[in-house]
Length: 461
Image 1 (cartoon, rainbow, N blue to C red):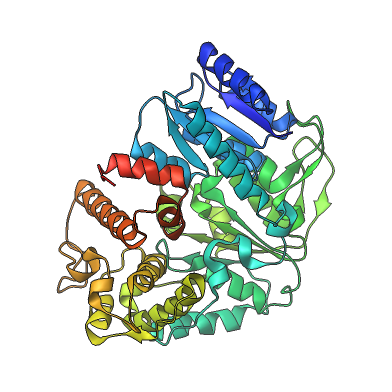
Image 2: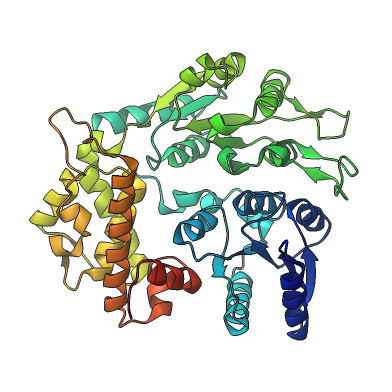
């Protein structure tokens, strides 16, 4: 029988929801706040967590992150009294499955729960398999690593070949979406550790109070709710490679522990005095300027020097223009396989639009745009009208003579992104004959999120 945890500071809402869920043959448990919920999650395996956004002792988004660290397989549905699309988007970013607005409709809730459970049960991967040697748990790595032809890309490839056989620590710098995880995995795959684990951890998604347990493990009784020994990610990566993404977000206390690991090649689980010897090759990445973080006192200087035995700087896509079309063709091949289509290439106008766009989101943005273009392509070649409006007529997104992006404030950027998202939803809905399930699948979101976006953008279907 599936277990569901209801987190809400309103006693009556918790009571009604638990009674309803019990009547539908679910084991329902309730918590009035974040601290109580975390203790329950530590002690009990829940299939689904229904979490109120506003809690007296925690923020709903922070609570999602904490629960996901304790139980990555747990399905979280965010509940709020306000149908706020921005909150919904943030919740999904932090790992929520979907989003519901109060007042909750029983039929809608039950449909969403069944959909979520069916989705989880159809996933054959276990937690251990996701953390295995396979690269599938590392975001977009499954798309394959492609070597560019630009001078900048050739230099990165040269560095990879040079340092892969060694055990020196590497720092990878680059904007979001430039492919830092691709480079880290390429280093691992060309090293003597290639048949051992490659463990990737996003430090930006680790709540400070749980980061130590996640990285270094804990023993039974180390803290309230620690009912069993738990190995940390460093133990799991023994004799392999550990990739710490967004290393700049690691707390000062955990920076000290990490420095000790690098110096002594030993760890201690939280609550234990026993030292565990480990052999781990460390690769880190960030989109921040660590030198400035050191100067401001936010990042330890001694740790920075230990991590920075070799530095790889990945240039943004707009500075690797020779690579843009190469990567576009690669993403076209991936999209053909994903969408079961046979688009062969791009016409000249589409190539010019793609090549001249600024690509703020780098490879990640390019991949999404190409997949969308393949979806809307009705012939053998992608034409310009298959591309999003912001690519065809960039407006703010144009090169200036010095190669820098034009000046605009965050409100301008937000409005542009929201307009592009609204247009994409409308076009996809039209292409799918207003079939919401198919539209949600193409957009890589769940149906509930699509409903919220339709309401938020005032899209009438």
